[in-house]
Length: 337
Image 1 (cartoon, one colour):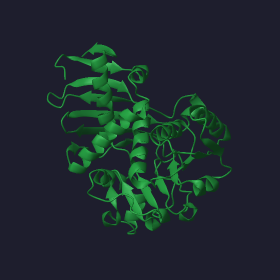
Image 2 (cartoon, one colour):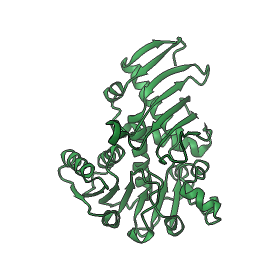
Image 3 (cartoon, one colour):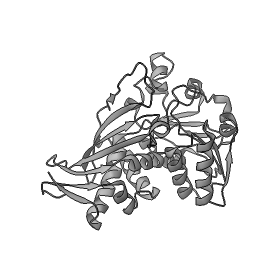
Image 4 (cartoon, one colour):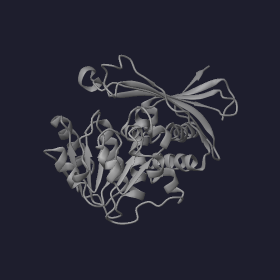
């Protein structure tokens, strides 16, 4: 890392130039972060949520500060500062989420980089689903169902198609039929051999999915356990989609980080407060499965739920991967401190 008093600024176009919309980079970086998390070689304070007008606000209306230190052979510190308004697309013509990542040299604690984070955030979230599917989905799965058809869904499905060439059919459902049609068109262009079906109901899509991915901004569950087929893997990215009974009836429940999951009145936190779920009932944190400390899928019929809150170590590891490429390829803008 440079000791010069300057920072490297990377815009979204810089990140794209560096291959920042390719899933391989993020699968590598996020796998590293999950393994270091399981080894305890990280620091990750619980993330605070900044909410304004909380009593009348939407669950997706917040700014989150996500600090972390990632250890290993190339340690780095950093912060993701990411804002979200659920009505940005409909009212302002903007993407729902926006933000910045700041990277710091962990030796001096000086900032070394600032970069746009909406792409990084979406891609690292997709990498979590990819990694989850490698260990927790049926090995021969061919059908994916996606609930919600916004930017996050697009990133999730593009990454899944890049990493799992056996995918034959994708079911889409969104309350906004135009969003479903737009995403269907994108996917058909990217993967013309894959059948893309716009489902007429959430139930139809979920029942069809060997892998089910939730990418919504709902604040109330709508997916009951009975909709899930035997052997289903659910990547519950948007956290609030599945009913409490799914956590209690699934064969395995996996999270990225227990402490992060058991807070903010999310479903797991509600179940813990009710005395219905506990750390002991959790099967594993995902990094434990990557290290082989806990088993992944053990039978074709298991229903497995991955409930990832999203961890700062994933963002910082991904951002540092991009930063290193930027320095090597002389991409970005140097700004004096």
